[in-house]
Length: 386
Image 1 (tube, rainbow, N blue to C red):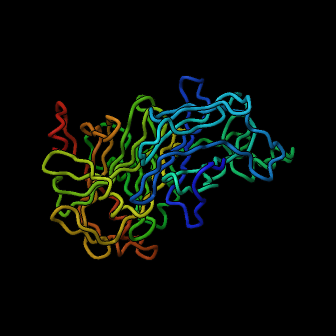
Image 2 (cartoon, helix red, strand yellow; image 1 turned 180 degrees about the horizontal axis):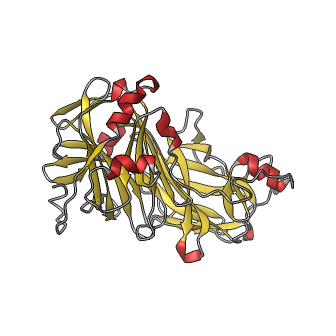
């Protein structure tokens, strides 16, 4: 996977490979892998090549015939190298790119193996980065598992079962709410304002947002059967009052293929507008998204202080009303356009995010009592929030 031109760079690569698990409803819920190659900084790339590789310590070293790539972006193609069908994913042209995506599909629904994806990325003809790796993944009998369990299963070692040999059901992690701020979005469409506070205690939330650190947040959401085949969003907004408008928004997006993305947008009046790529790069320091066993996971880290339009934000000092909304979105390939929300809530009081610590648990519990704002009317793109 070494180009025949240019020189290999020794600096850290300004690109990353992100992988997620998809439960493919068209393939009897087979678990497949979505892959995104994207630039991490204000750069582009002209070419790339990606292949699946076995982990170095895996007893099954050959992977070329275990699965194949399917492209998701038009400026890429798949190739069959060394007589292995579609075992390579690469560029279709030399035009500048910021991100590309594909899927890797196991040939067998009982696939066993531990693997990662390796990329070589050409920024310009004279410079490239090699051996860019994704995180490893472990599969047993066609389903993702963790490294420890995989090693035991492959080695025929006994596995401790949970709840009298009942397989573990996957759900939102509510245990994290014992020592950090959690905000829950109820999984129903009632007008009871207590539903959102109670859904944490009853472990029945549609979505759960928590603050890991002062500027580090995450959303977990359980896809409903109706939303599992649609493009869905779960959004968190920072507002200095209890009305939406001129506010900063973080969007956790999962499309119908199970690809998870984190986007930034701004409420301007009653409309919602995605931020520019440069604005996102300036504000968003880290991001990670996965869709595993029906649960959407988004994690992101923001700059503590930033300016958006004519407004300054300071997560370390200012208090904000926190809004959480869910709904569906459309994409034109360049921007994501959110439709009117299905569910929405806000905190009853502004929250000083810098004061949320494990020692202030009582205050955290008080703050999970939320006011539900519910409205039903025909959606209009320029009337996103009521």
